[in-house]
View 1 (cartoon, rainbow, N blue to C red):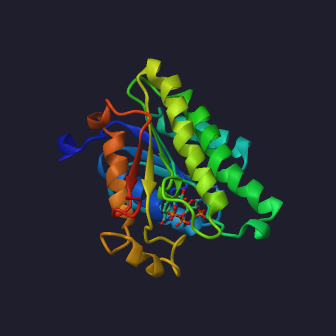
View 2 (view 1 turned 60 degrees about the vertical axis):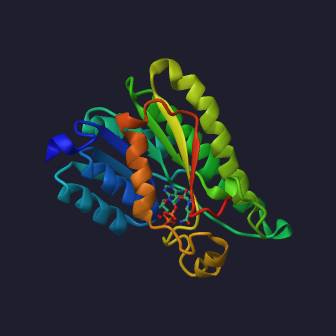
Length: 246
Ligand SMILES: NC(=O)c1ccc[n+]([C@@H]2O[C@H](COP(=O)([O-])OP(=O)(O)OC[C@H]3O[C@@H](n4cnc5c(N)ncnc54)[C@H](OP(=O)(O)O)[C@@H]3O)[C@@H](O)[C@H]2O)c1
């Protein structure tokens, strides 16, 4: 079986791998043969569940608490992943937060938190991980289709952070191209996770496919971008949203 796996011998780190899309990505990377380290901030039990799922695939997994708003924690997570798993080939930067609020309702604290986790944390995670990536390394960010289909009430800060990721990826792709490392961004639409539970059904009518996404569908795209098959793609943002952004 192992020869069918796309990522045998590879090591990945998933920032925000305890729940939702990040956990699905971590499980899928393990299914493809990778050992996987993951970070979490608030849900150690969910992180432990995901590690068990990685181990059930016959791979090595470990979880480390690392707040993506904390630069030191981000760098420590990368150092620990390399120390425990021996190398680093794939970095998935998924950790992100959604806070909705009208213009006047957004506090300075919320603004800073979203920028720190969704933008600064993404940059610092890539910066720290890229120092270890070999030729053929893969950087994958999880943005959002709100970067291209914006204009929802209360979404200005969130959409701004995800648009920043899409642009960031282009510059980093050029910076890392001489080393043969690709950098791409996945832009999901509404996907059933804790982040969207409770308000996702009202969005369905505006989705041409008339359903929300499953985290495993996003994970499938992560697996493709992590594999050798995607080697000619870099700097791209790929929207996966049931046609919502059309
Ligand atoms: N779900 C959607 O519809 C959707 C659509 C477009 C884009 N996205 C993006 O996809 C990514 C994942 O979303 P999701 O729906 O899977 O969210 P989720 O269910 O809320 O899970 C968020 C994940 O990120 C981690 N995380 C959150 N803040 C963190 C921090 N400060 N430091 C480290 N880790 C942190 C969480 O860790 P803990 O478990 O420890 O809290 C968890 O693993 C986000 O970037 C989100 O913006 C989601």
